[in-house]
Image (tube, rainbow, N blue to C red; front, side, top):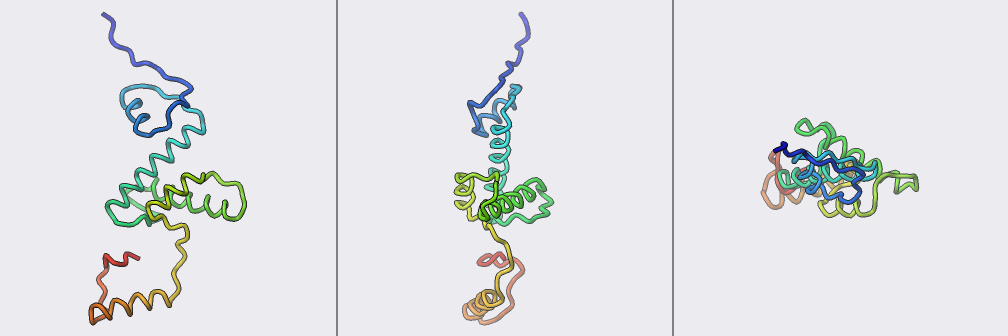
Length: 144
């Protein structure tokens, strides 16, 4: 009776589903992915982390220096840079289906400060509804 050996799977382009890959790696399988599949796997991992972030916070604006998950903050910044390159006609690592997935969760591609007038209109709306301008630090209707 020989102890059960974990099987080794190589050249696996057959799956890029992060749940399948997680199951295999967690159960001792050594997965040698192609570079493209490995990048897709990592992208899916960060995307799932973004989904969890949006469930907790109600938005997809991960801080650049996100102390709870620095990799996610860096990944989000990288997605914005890649998208900007694509918009400028330059080679970019981001793919159309990834853009669609990010759009689906309300990802904001440009975080430049909003014009003063927009913020003023938001304040005026708050005052009209509440009769005062003392907005709480974490006002749920406008998390910016």
